[in-house]
Image (cartoon, rainbow, N blue to C red; front, side, top):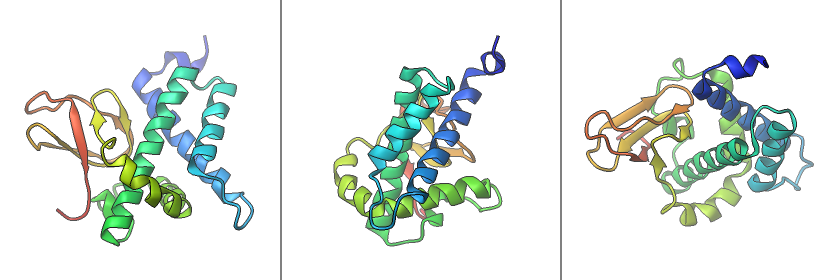
Length: 175
């Protein structure tokens, strides 16, 4: 039995989310100047690598690539609409978040900002987060009652502890 098979399925998916984000960051960092690949191409490569290395099934890799893309679009929307610094999107003290993950996520967001600004408008309606999905660090608010869930690292979204709702929106900025 492979060591990964004994691990908690949620922990395995959270770790895979972070590895996928690392691979997207590496793909964008090694691209030639002025020929930065699109976020979609980088995500496709990261997804295929996860399947090739048997880290995830094809279905899991597709789902996690969707989560990473959703989080990146949400970050781009925040940057485009507010003009604030990326770090304020997290709404946490930087000591709480692993510095490496923050730097990696910021790097991917910065490198894909122009593309993501274009996609941000399309993503507004698709920016809902649902129970059972994996989300990156930040704060999500229940669309039913407004109860906030705080993620200090990537994790699976539970039902709302207040109203048992299953739909959330990312809370960004300072309010």
